[in-house]
Image 1 (cartoon, rainbow, N blue to C red):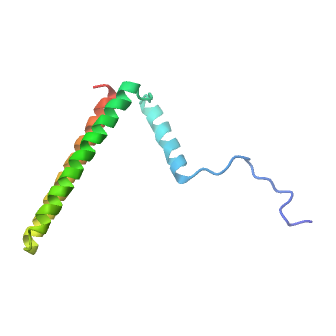
Image 2: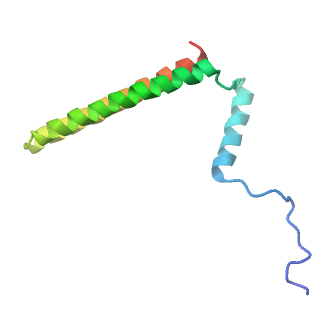
Image 3: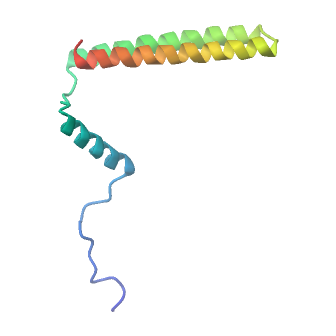
Length: 109
């Protein structure tokens, strides 16, 4: 049966890669070119990272509870907007602190 595609083969028998996999390959290649060395975290680092994540997860939960309580007691739209902005800034600060701490742990600082 000509034209059915029976005679055509894919150049590679490997499955297609996802956009994520392709992006990660590019990151690894650029890191290698820049001399960045990737080492898997040690057990101690894994434990410290988990502890940091748990700590900041608890801080974020506490912040959320406090924020919800404040919002329940505030009717003024301007004050509500201000408190919402403050809440967002505090969340961003905690997330940034968490990420920085995890980065220091991974680097062994």
